[in-house]
Amino acid sequence: MSRQPAYSRTSSRTPNPHAGMSYTDEVRMGQASPPIEPSIIKFPSATGARRDKNDSRINDRIAEGRALAPRNAQMTQELAATPGSPEFIAELAARSQELEGASPTEILRWAAGRYAPGLTMGTAFGPEGMCLIHMLAQVAPQTIIFNLETGYQFPETLALVERVHERYGIAIQLERPEQTVEEYEKIHGGPLYKINPDQCCMDRKLRVLERVAKGKSAWISAIRRDQSPDRSVASIVGWDKKFGLVKVNPLVNWTKQDVWKLITQENIPYNPLHDQGYTSIGCWPCTRSVLFGEDERAGRWSGTAKTECGLHKAD
Ligand code: SF4
Image 1 (cartoon, rainbow, N blue to C red):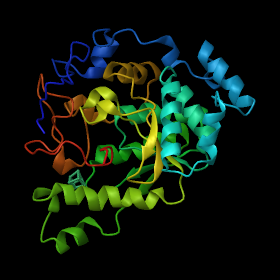
Image 2 (image 1 turned 90 degrees about the vertical axis):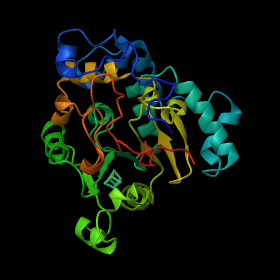
Image 3 (image 1 turned 120 degrees about the vertical axis):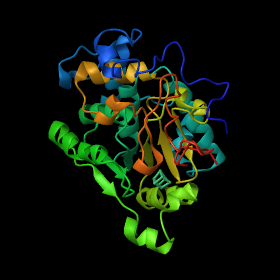
Image 4 (image 1 turned 90 degrees about the horizontal axis):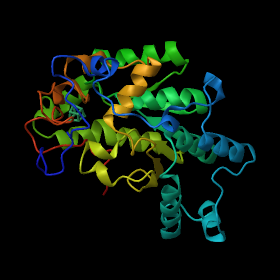
């Protein structure tokens, strides 16, 4: 797959963050973000912020135990349908369509009301994930949040575990592969990411998520549709057959500007590597900073055809 497809992930709405200043600097100076919909960044009364009309409506329905209640008899079958069955998937699609107009906080409330305590969230502490952690801390702080600790992450990334705990009182669970990096590289005669990154991601990310998924009903991811062609078709709610979980993507309709605007406004912790040109951060061997005009994810597996670790790829 070409890393610079016709589908451009860098548009006039996504100014490059390295034109002489950090992205957050641009946001602070009012140069980066188009107006964000007020309803998107409203939080519930826990923050003292005024709730928007939709939040109020959704909260009322949650309080009555019928959050986003099925609108017809067919939709009520969703609760009874076998996970993964055609009926189940069809009902998720209908629900996803219904949630297209909802804000991320509304989607998270719906997901928590529907799937907790079987709801979990995976994060690599990207800016989108930090926004979701911020929202979950307010609408569903009991949600189990985990990080796939491959053993190859940047120290700056892992430092966010403590920063999240300090800010929100949330203890991120680090989920590790069975083999340490040393054991793994010994088995393979060296770093596998150099010769077979797909297998490395499979062993150190996907297999771990498969283990985490056991006993869960749904997981939250922080992907945005405008990040890549693969992600452009993501639904808000769908069936992730790879892991046997419902997948909830509250930020699919957000832009990079929306994300950084919220981070700036709410002073949300973020990875300091973003201010050094790392727009998308994964494991250190497979991540580089990007140059002016490059795609947001151009620094991931740079120089190879690989664009995704596989967690968010449809089968
Ligand atoms: S991103 Fe690189 S180092 Fe990390 S699991 Fe994948 S191939 Fe291995």
